[in-house]
Image 1: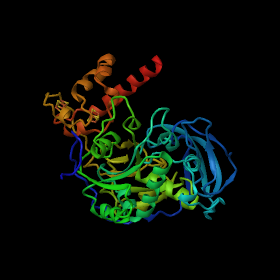
Image 2: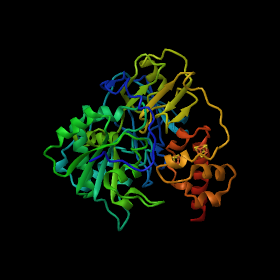
Image 3: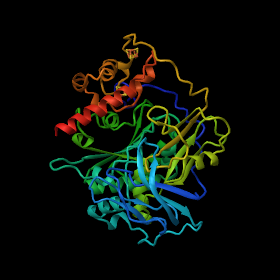
Length: 438
Ligand code: SF4
Ligand code: SF4
């Protein structure tokens, strides 16, 4: 039987060779962290003030809103500022700045539990208290994601081990090095949702990860490892559900409409850490890579560490042509390096000036390659025109709101049309119009 996959998509060079086989290393404790209070849903209110001493794991921000996740101190030390900062996701957020005392003192917690001892309600409460969010980039609060609306339920949980974005290898390393924890986390998702079957989808170019996970689940009859064709954007939720379950998430719908819960590898690992060690989400693994770095690495680092600190740790040796938070397909270009690692920062990519040289945009030649590449079945060339000319009704009818901003259309475009910025803008406008109507 062939490898499972989805319709459309593209095959960019994986470019994972420099870090794919590199075990995760732990970054030195930062002197300072900048912890944005908006990291998943509604922004939190600060629970500390300037001058306070904090310990690692102490809750420093919380919101009463349901769609919000609390944030915690990631180092011990003194709160030196609470101020607006630029974030790598392009937003500005109020942030708590902590200067380290160098002691790395952790807040006393209960020290963890065991999954068997926990009820589904216990797990759901822990997910919120630990501040878990989607760690693939979107940072949607996980306790909301695991709470289906009335009348809907999950019958399958999928761990997203595709990591289809070029250059990024942090999930791949977690699958290899923290195999037991990932399996425990998956069992916790099954328990909290009541779903009967768990899947771990991994692209077939990550053979070590597939072998490690397969070996760990030989006795687990409710868990299946699914090797997937290496193709972008295999890690997108809708494409993963299509590839593994053969189900379609309806236009405007959510994975729960197809009975599926998709969870990121990092989030699943964070859940297992919360269960077994009582640890809230204060650190994550980030792939820091690119040709101007002497030592590209997968780094375990505290949330709030500045990109510039990690670039120094990786021995930046050359001019930065482009700095990206995430990968080259769906990442966000940065104008400065003093931005903090967020819960959703999976990678930091540095391109040389030569690699980053922009290609001039030319007129569309109606070749249709973008249409073939779109995994959602949209017509990017038409949507591009609608969005550039603010034809919102046509853009709505063309389902611009379903665009997942994967960039596959732009990747194959021979005219180098800047399709994604136009579609992103159109999508935001159409969604805003819908909200206003409601
Ligand atoms: S139109 Fe949107 S979903 Fe389709 S390929 Fe382009 S960016 Fe991806
Ligand atoms: S791939 Fe580019 S040139 Fe071809 S139809 Fe799409 S937008 Fe036009």
